[in-house]
Amino acid sequence: MTDLEFLDQAERLLAGVETSCDRINDESDADLDNQRVGGMVTITFANRSQIVINLQKPLHEVWLAARCGGFHYKFDGAQWQDTKGQGEFWASLSRYASEQSGQALAFHA
Image 1 (cartoon, rainbow, N blue to C red):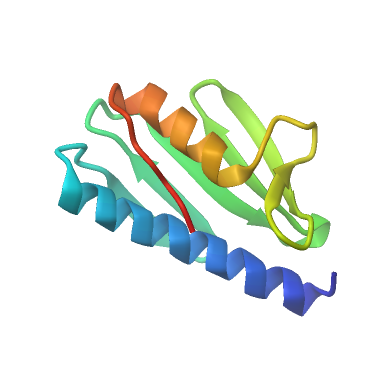
Image 2: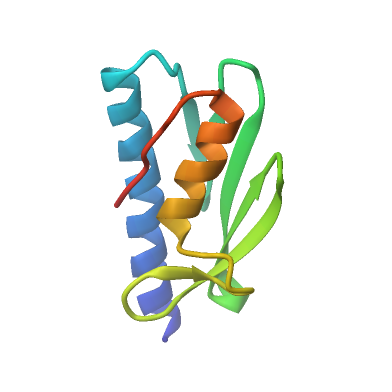
């Protein structure tokens, strides 16, 4: 994957996170606050816990930090997969966000 291909895919992922936050706020009382600064999106929940998603451009990875730990994802040509086999990005984000918010939240591209 070239740098430009990585940036294109990573930008789609970050935009999808922002769109999902907006959709979740419209459809539920989750009250997510998402802020984007460059290649980083911070999601803050009503209980003040956070999930941070940021780009690691030199490694062509997306990193996700949640209350339960930190995770690295690489694009495999179809999906963003955890580098240690812990699953796909969107499913993981949904699980960690649900844990932190205390209600079922579904994030997707």
